Image (cartoon, rainbow, N blue to C red; front, side, top):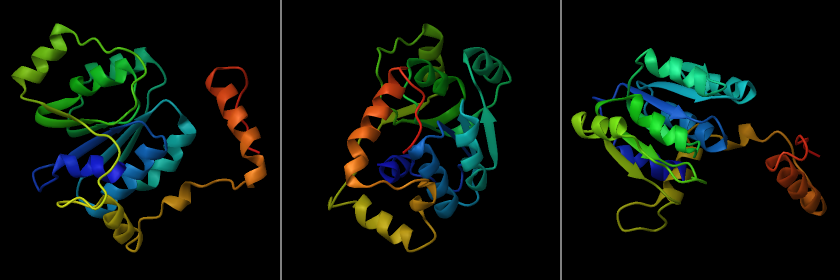
Length: 197
């Protein structure tokens, strides 16, 4: 999934910077892949979770902690701009914010699973038009496609330093899966703080 998204950028020598919005599992994998495949690109990752950002440090040039919309507004006003943006959060605010931090002629890949309607302001649409920003979406991966096979390519990467397993912090038995899923669900709906078993 992540490799498919990164391929959509068609990264070349003119791309100097990428911002990954979201330090969840997919965002962390993206940072690791980019550092392996494109070591000259400056990688910035943004998230509200300090623990996730600690994991991202080894694969990024810069981590940015933005805990709320006020922090985001301050960050946007500082006029940080990136050649490439990988949106991996999936909120209406993050989709629109990706436009604000993209350079002219930059590229944005929207990867986060959206759960609400997104309404773009006139200002955001003007930025897309005037700055000739390219926005693409991505979903899933290509498998045994005539032009690309993300599954085969990721296996090659795993033979060359890519190690998604470094993000595994716990292993459970099959019998524990129902309890774990219930805990995850309760955490998601705010009923309890998630604690792994």
